[in-house]
Figure 1 (spheres, helix red, strand yellow):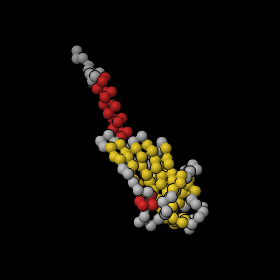
Figure 2 (cartoon, helix red, strand yellow):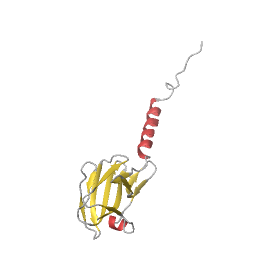
Figure 3 (cartoon, helix red, strand yellow):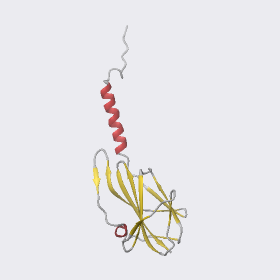
Figure 4 (cartoon, one colour):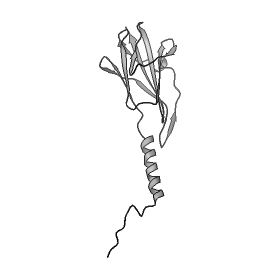
Length: 149
């Protein structure tokens, strides 16, 4: 009579736990950085993406950046109507988001999203918006230039 061997029973429990933990770490820290979606009147607007710091299993990055008006100085910008709104979404929800508006003079102030909408100013001019998403793996800044008409 032949004896049946349980293949999993022959693997030490510590090895199974170690492999499982490595798999969890790998999946957690190798996801690509999240993206942002900005929509104005059913049109998708492209934001510039700057990784401020992002940790993966294999590397760790940190960066300093100039203000959004400097980052987007050569960008054309998107014309928008006075008092309109932008819809903001992320491919992976951040733990926290910080949103600021900048003028060409470099002055910034915090602004608040109402749900997933950002109300644009009524005063015509060029405005730079920064959205900083915070995740366990790090922070990413997304910046966009709008021209309020």
